[in-house]
Image (tube, one colour):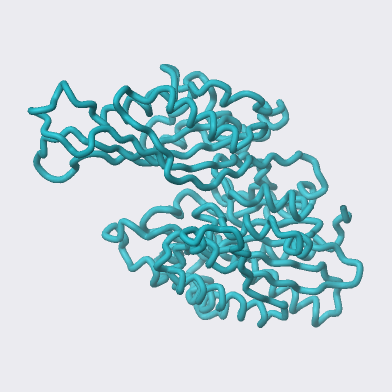
Length: 476
């Protein structure tokens, strides 16, 4: 069902939309130290908002003890933690979201300023309009509505803990460190965890995420001569760092596109026939993928289905390569240095640290003669998440979503990652439910990101409904 013009105008006049616009306007690029003040301001705004709905709320920072001074800046982005006390003996829910966003670059491709939320048609355009401010805030608006109604009617309510971080897009450094503190682990203990930071199926059919790949991203530097050299004077004599980088990156995969790193794929937990059948039922066709990405979906290992490649197989991807001269005209040099940004998506059965070490060992073994390889930074290192079909949490989500939409939900195994979710599952003891309302047309991580009013209202409805149903979950 599409949003009507009257519904759009009604929503724009509501308190939900006014607060949403205020939240999205904060330029919370958590990976950028120059935006720390903006992140703190946004976290403070969220703390005040949560107190306004009756929660006990605070800003939390991890201990910097033992951390080198040059790395403490990453621990300065606040985590917002809040609690709503429910009925005596009620189960406890943990809701996770993130208020940080991707950088807005390239700015020239935005049709409207990225941090000035702009309604156009039935959508709102801004960085963070969907990922994840739009999704988590709409969910919390649903929670607020349920809480007010339950309070007025004397209905039973679960306990709700809310965790909003500002570094999901850059590895969740601060939150991972907090999860190592026993007192914080005790505070986030819960029976069920809710995350609204994923996508629905085509046509906004509800989707339950039953698995997500883990992630590790890192930088590789290759150095050769002490300076860029004249390509005529030293061509054929000096090693070329740009060429060496090409050789190194090519060595990561074989001729069929399979990962060539020895031991990297050892121990992978293969999907069950039931999982493959469910994943295929909710997956886009090759033609639909082609229409979305503008080319054939031929990445990864040849001869393997897109369903397997996208949700059940690991990847090593080159995110960017920089070397030598790239300006107008020519500059005939032999580059002395090359830098590559890489990421790995990992599946169940893979240990992120072990995989990273295997990749570094493989690259060192293939380092061209006369060159030096180093790995100056890495982040992520989060494992995959794989959830059992038919669990009480999955059944609860199916029941709620079937009432919301007569088509019922599909199941998805997403290739993307929310790095900290697997760790939150382990430390909180909570059974996760990942349901979101994103669509490919939202253009998250790209210029002109947007979120439709229909998506906002669905996320709000989901938040209100699942909190209402959750009182009856089985503890433990």
